[in-house]
Every structure is written in C-alpha cells, then in structure tokens.
Image 1 (cartoon, rainbow, N blue to C red):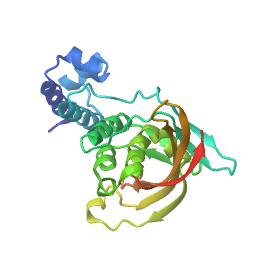
Image 2 (image 1 turned 180 degrees about the vertical axis):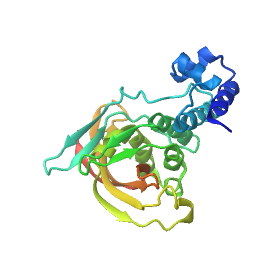
Image 3 (image 1 turned 135 degrees about the horizontal axis):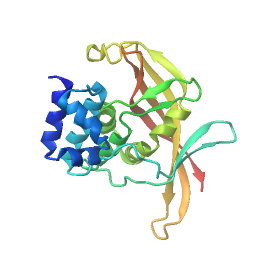
Image 4 (image 1 turned 90 degrees about the vertical axis):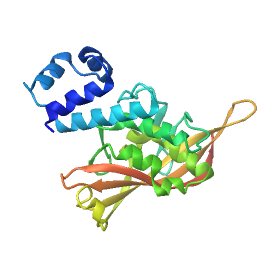
Length: 242
C-alpha cells in the first residue's frame, strides 16, 4: 500500500474528520490535505509512528501521549567521586502488577521518534517503536521482583537523562537471526545509574534515596543508527540520605 493511502486509511480508522485528526495528532491541516490527495508523500517514519499511537489509543482508550514530557521532576547530579546519577524525584508507578505495565508502555510511547546524545561518546541514540514493548514486556522485566521491578518502572521517567549519562560502552556481536537487520552491527551495553526517593508511610516525609545501577542496551541497526532497546540488570547499589 502506498504511504498516501496508508495515512488516509489510518485517519479513517479513528473516525475523526481531517481537521480533528490534525488537531489530535498535531499535524498541519494543509500538510495532511497534500498527503491524502497525493500532492506530497508523507515520510515513512511518520506513518509508522501514527499507526503506533493509534494502536495504543485503541488498546488503552486514552488520548495518545506524545513527546511533551517537560514536566518531569528529573535531574542529573554529580557525586563527590565524579560519577553521574539521574535523580528521579517522583514515583509515578507504585503497585506494578501485570496491568500496570500497560501504563508504563503507554508512558514510554511519548519518547518514540525522539533522539538524545550520550555525553561521553557523542553518539546519538534514537527511540524507535519497538522500545516501549520491549521495556515493558521482555522476559528480563517479567523476571524482576520487588524493589527492582518498581525501579525499572519508574526509571522510564528518566530515559533522556539516562541516555545522557550512559558510560563505559561494551560492544558485542549480534548472534540472533531475528535481529540480523535491526542489530546488524551489534549491541552496546552502557552503564547507567539512577536514584529514587523513599518516603515515610505515616508522614510522607522524604527519608532517603535508593540508588540503582543498570545496563542500557542499544542496538546498532543496518541503517547506521543506534537505537535504545532496553534497560537491563537493574540492581540496588546503596541508600543515600535525603
């Protein structure tokens, strides 16, 4: 199917008028008109992202979340030893039963299509549509328990900052047939660290921060770009006073 026909079909699936579709998905009306009548061809990645957002909307019955995540209480700090740490001051995800991970996946969809730079290596890391599903539903995630499980859920709030501070990359060759294209040039594992607050159950007072270490898994695709794939091996390092 041609991209022009595909985007017209996607709008039809939503039941929205062209104007309402453009308002909801933040597309200039004139641009949408040109795409649908064939005067211009939409970029393939735009069609792919729209299909992804519409799918999430159908699953979770919510207005799709996009890339506007400026109201996050997240910062990067440098410890006395020079190591950088992503401080995530809000714990958005708490219970984390099976259904809660759908909320994590929906939250992560806002990053799809964005890219960030690793300060240490100057590498650009892209967020593709496979990331939310892998992060929320991988076998590694399912095996997490207790504090580590909640830590991974809440680490989703600091993805841009975690990419920024990623360090000590280690490369390994791709050995899986299913990734022969999207990881043609191998995998990189970067070290990342983040901290989450612990509050008193009675007073709500901030007691301390729990510090976690993890590995950021990045695939090197056949298109030459590097894509964030997952955050693995999350383990608690220590506790720090508030």
